[in-house]
Length: 394
Image (cartoon, rainbow, N blue to C red):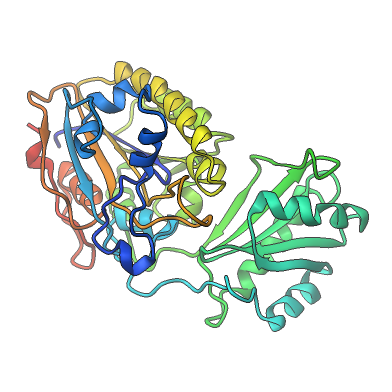
């Protein structure tokens, strides 16, 4: 065992462009980091630059001074949150989850959901979560919660909105659990059912809250997380990590209300005495800024994150390895509202590293999981992908 603790932070959607197969996803030219940097050339992210982020973009003037930096290509057939995280932990997804972007969900699904929940569902189309609230939330409120908003996106998701005070969280969660059961059928099988609670009294002030809950499919096989847990190592998830893996392989989960809180929780928990993995997802980059095509908000969030990243680095001891990465792209300057197929950064840092280094691009996100397993002396199962780079950390 080289490191006692490995802290892996996923800056959700922070792609760095140049995916080899971007054309196959109609995402040619997408570059989340590159276009944010073009928008704000003086972006204040000194700690990310210290870890080598600038080396991965020719336009960045700030180059590496610490750690190991490289790009990772996604091997899976999709560009969503689940496949990205699952791939980090060794699973290559070869069959994409079902999407219902073009026509909404089949009438038979809606009918069954209405019969089993006792609610009427309105919407049933692909939409932005904030826009559909402006369009339909008053109808839900006026129905006193009898009507609920149901919608999807370019991702494999079924999302249900419920007003926290009108519908109530418990009722919203109950309906989403029923929707998850129904969508386990092969013809409806979406990756996630998401409860989207909100508050407000008019289209001008409707706001989604942090009480979102994801009901995901379980991973298609055992992952690196299972290998760690089954061998007695701690696996702590922060943010929506436990949701993404449907609790599989997780020893303890901590809910976050924001990406800032998620980093604060990470800094706090890395001080605990444990041996294993602390795995954090910071969702605001994706949900608040990428999907809403808000480059200003994304840039601001990056700068806030960088301050906390610096605090995280200061709190590290000699037995900790820090990994900063992403699960897909979501270029806030690109057309539409969908994720974008991009490479992602992988920045590794430990206080005992003697050199700074940039290495060749990895062929999959599985590099992270393979490195974690080798660090703890565990053999990678034959069905998991990824090549360790632990030998590069010297």
